[in-house]
Length: 310
Image (cartoon, rainbow, N blue to C red; front, side):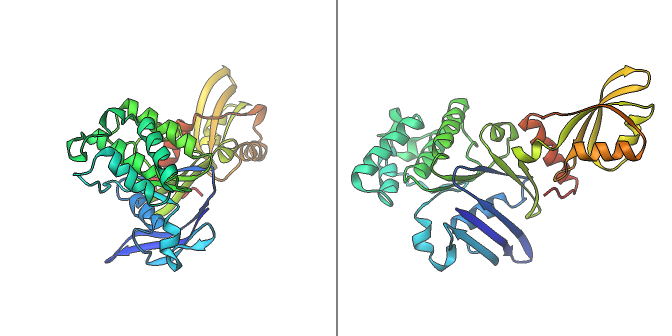
């Protein structure tokens, strides 16, 4: 549904996004992670057609975005960090206007009521936007992004300013929308993002510095039991692994270790080859899976230190 090819955006002398390529399909919930200034908001604005790229192409449903922007933006629901809301409209009027941009009158009425319920806005639907709290405005902005039933949802830091109840409502709504849409969102809170994402893209200085998928994760962590004094030091000094952790000293010469491989490698294969090469006696070698939160935090740490993990 979405394809970015060597995408770049330059502001004066600064490249906010540079040489970024990826594809996203229906049903995926992709999170953009990275430090402040990494390029997350700029990338979302590019995908939404809110700003034009300096270089590269964006394809939406196999059509180049800037060759037919009006037709292609229709299936996109975009939430920038600051979403313009008319202060003199009511909650229901705001959602009705957004829904009617892409839906028939009957469908729009149904969609408006669904989003009012989904985001807990029933008690405020007759209130003017200017009288809402910051959290209530954020719920309204989110509802406005979903109400047109877009095939592509682009959400910039959607959890910001939401209380716990609002966060739960958003998690549920994203899970529902993912059945028929492709969703890309940015996040500062890895723990919140981990609950809903199916893939993560990590940006550093405007470039794609790392990715996470469950498929890669299943190849990335293993537990080994090895008989040889100095085995832990040997694995740790190899340069083949992201980290080496001692789990247990089983006997004087037998150690159980947890090995985390570098992204894009099969850690079990690397462990077996290293052990054979250095005459370490493997007594056990098994796959181990980190929690999604642990994996994402490790990836963020490694990319922040300058490693590129594709």
